[in-house]
Image (cartoon, rainbow, N blue to C red; front, side, top):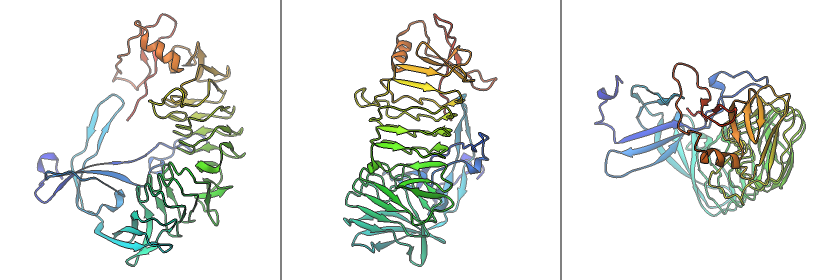
Length: 413
C-alpha cells in the first residue's frame, strides 16, 4: 500500500489489530526443526476492531475468511526489544459478509453460520438442547469449521456430534460446556485448537468411529493418528492416568486445568509440550522418565496468582540424563517445590543448592519458589539487566556472593 502515510481511510470504518494465535516452532521426533509452514498453529486469528466512530466492536474470525476489506500490518518484536513493522497492506475479504441460521437437527436451538465463497463455518449457538448436531451444510455450502468460542459456555449441552466434513475446530470452541459428557469427532478433522475443550468438566470420553491419519481415540483419550502424541485428556475420565507405551510426546495443554492427581509417564516419552500439565493443581506426584528430552514452556506452569494451598503437591523434581531443553517457567505452578535434582549424566543442566543451572553451574535457569524469594530479597543481586545486541541472546551477568554468575531470563518474541 506504500506505507502508513499513503493509505486512504475514507472508505474504511474500522481499524483492526490482527495477530495469528498459537504459532509454535515444532520439531520432528529426531529433534530437528520442521519448516516454519509446518509449525503447530491455531485455526483462527483474532481481529480486534476499533471503529472510526465513537463506539468499539470486537470479533474473532478465521484469518483466511475475512468478510470485509482489510488493512493489515505486521509488527514483530525481537528478543533484543527491537520492533520491525511492515508497511500497511490492503486485502480484499474473501467472505460474503452473510450469515445463515440453522435449527439444531437434534432439538430447537439455533446455529449461526458464516458463509464464505466455497465453505461455511459455525460461529455461534443459542439454545438449551441437551444434544447438538453440528450442521453439515448451510445455504448449499459445506460447513467445514467450528469457529472460536462458537459454543462457549453452553451449560445445557450434554452430547455433541460433529459430522464428517468438519476439518477445523477453533480456540475455545466448546469451552465451558461444563455438562458435556461425550463428543463425537469426524475423521475429516485436521486442525484442532489445543484449548477447544477447556473446562469441559463432565467430559468423560472422546468418540471417533474410525481413526484418521491425523487423530485417533484410545479408551476415550484423543491421540495423534499414529498414536505417538497424547492430544487431550477428558477432564472427567478420572484422576489417574497411565500414559500408554509408545507415546512420544504429551501435547500442548493436553491435561491443562484437569483434576489429574497421578500420572504414570512411560519410558520412551521424549517431550512435554507447553502447558502440558499447566494448572493441574491437584497433581500429587510426577516422575519424569529418563528418556525425556524436552520440557516445554510452563509445562507445569499456569496462573502466577495461584494460592500455595491450591497448587500441585509436588516438593521435588528430578531431571533425567537426556533433558537438553527446559522452557521458561516450566515449573512455575509448583509453589511447594523445594528441591530440584539433576542426573549427573545430563549434558546440559546441573542442580546447585536448590537452583537448576547450566552444566557449568554459573547460570541459573530455574529456581524453587523459596529460592526465587531469596533472589528478590538479596540486595547484592541486581534484577535490572540488559541484553547485548552484538550477539545472540544469552543469560545475563549478575553479581552473587557464590560462584553463580548469571540468571537466564525468559525471552519472548
